[in-house]
Amino acid sequence: MNKRFPAVLLAAAMTTGLLAGCSDNKTEQASSNPSGAPQGKVTVQFWHSLGGKNGDYINEMIKRFNETHDKIEVVGTFQGSYDETVTKLQQAVAAKTGPDITMLERAYVQMFADAEVLEDMTPYMKKSQLNVDDFPQGLMGHSTFNKKLVSLPFNRSTPILHVNKTMLDEKGLAIPKTWDDLKKVANALVIKENGEFKRYGFSMPYDTWYPIAMISQAKGKFYNDAGTSIGFTNGEGVKTFKFLKDLQNTGALYYPPAQDSGNIVNQMFTSGKIGMMYQSTGVIGSLKDNVKFDYVTAFLPMDQVYATPTGGANLALMSASANKDAAWEFINWAMTDPKGGLQFILDSGYLPFTKKMVESPQMKALWEKEPNRKVAYDQLQYAVDTNKHVAWPQDMQEFFKAIQAIMYDNKDIESTLDTFKKETERLLKK
Image 1 (tube, rainbow, N blue to C red):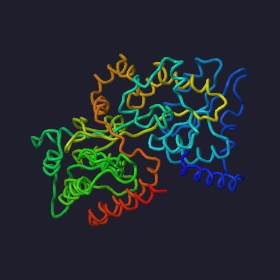
Image 2: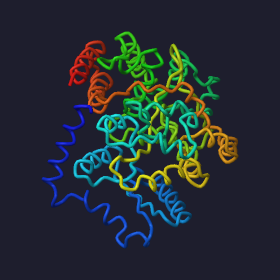
Image 3: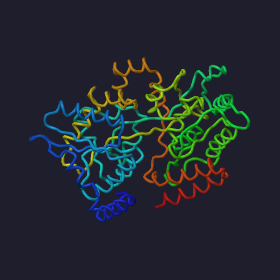
């Protein structure tokens, strides 16, 4: 068992004990279904991280399952953001009050897998005549650890290029396919009057996702194969951030404030303050309802190669569950029944996570009607999982510090990345 996680569990257990008077962890399961499941039914507790419209969609999916299964009652409980769900799950594992099924942001799966608190789903898959080949390879990078299949993709996404094609057409510009194209097009879209930028070329939210994508496009990796250091040289890292800073200095790139950056960028795109943006495929639905121009999506432009990270969450079966068979029946239904995950994907806009979904008449009809949504799936052939390490949550914070220093504070790129590398290596030795 990995040494890193038991320490986290110990801290969580202490916190749980200290906060017993105000913690909801023990009462969440009991109060989620206060009247209890109908007699003779097995109750399956499912923790998830989807609020808003996506929360409505998953609640509707759970309702469809419960209406068609007379021996199982699934109780879905929203636990907050991905990070909040992880914290609550750590505490629940320590207190032995965890759910049967949990949603886990894909980069956190390894931490729980190394702690041996996730069930190996391989035997259940065999009984249901499922195998890993039924899922797109680009979504399976955070599913198998220590030779055990401990999670399956569910609400998954990937960054893509969103384009105001009307704006590009007015300038006679083509959608960029390479970094050089992106530089040319973004600079051509800039409008500057009296020393003030009225329009920028493109933007992206404040996130590790996009620099990691670009480092991968320059043929770097976030971690080396041995997991002892970062996997990109200063050449690839400096190249990425120098490219961004050069564009930032000309107004070709607007880099937003950290707070609420996603909404800021989306609003700038819909209002015509930027012509292009790197953003998740998950915003397509809201954008298409708000734009008043020809809106298209495309692959992230390549440098040496095409490459994109993936995001979103997987489903995992907890090894401490007393209802594993019933819990698996729900997971299997979500993976295979058209009224399960497929309908959730059609509703929400996340990526189809099985090959049968991709080939379904419903998905084909949607893609024909909304081709923008197919781009993200097609781009999965270039998916990379370069942040795959149990230390990622801590290293991510260090990478954020480097991004802040370079993009906001104009610190020297090379020395900033050197500092980041040393700190990452220190954390990886723990």
